[in-house]
Amino acid sequence: MTRKRYGLALALLLALTGTASAQDFPSRPMTMIIPFAAGGPTDVLGRVIAQRMGEILKQNVIVENVGGAGGMTGSKRVAEAKPDGYTFGIGTVGTHAQNQSLYARPAYNASTDFTPVALIAEVPIVLIARNSLPVNNLKEFVAYAKANEAKMSFGSGGAGSASHLGCVVMNMAMGTHITHVPYKGGGPAMQDVMAGRLDFECEIMSTVKPHIDAGQVKGLAILAKTRSPALPNVPTALEQGFDAQAYTWNAVFLPKGAPPAIVKKLNEAVLAAMHTPAVRERLAGFGAQIVPDDQATPDYLAGFVKSEIVKWRGPIQASGVQIK
Image (cartoon, rainbow, N blue to C red):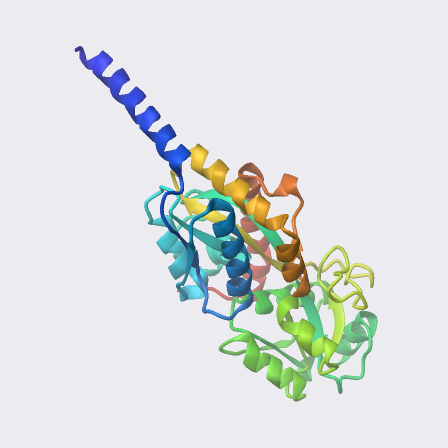
């Protein structure tokens, strides 16, 4: 056999083998890597999706929490896994957009080191304030902040976290420079807002909703284009005259080089999970807004990641935070 014919035969054999393996996929349990600690909002969402995907694909989806470096440790594990479909991960605006500018040397290239599968949902960030702050809406808050910015402070779950960058966006919209107090997690920051030791915080809806519902903090604005059914009485910043938008999102990613047939099968499983009434109800309960089907495609997610990297570069540079 000539070298050319041998090459063609080998290519055909590999193509047939890939097709067969894709048809059989999955033939054993899969692993979903969640790049944050157990119990957080990304973990909760990931586990809800993983359980339903396992039922649809008739294989267990084992959830593995791999935290560290703002989610980069777990996401790097996904990027370096074998691209056979048996290891995939949940990515967020932090792991696949903000970290690309936030870290001086990111552990991976979010645009090229992964195979996009599906965007799942967006979770808006909510501006909350201590109950003793003498404001009741965003217009009053902005006026108060401009008059008192030198003595005000806001908290976050850490420098560069979603809660920090949410308030950076809000400060940019207001034209203020209010002191940032970083905490080791959103929980301690929330406790100090409730205790009146911090003036405000910009935190994801799934975290703040119980405290707003209980009257422990004031919900002043949702930093999104539309109101959320989870907090129907909290208006958006846009409604109140301020174009300040901040959120997190969740998506499924495979390692670079995953076969298209396997990407298609996982995408279909994610879509089926998102259409399951019990899943939709559970996610909506903590403020997650499931994306339309035309935004849940691999091609859409690929372009979305690139646009999100560009979008967050400005606020991150404005914050002055860069992690070496």
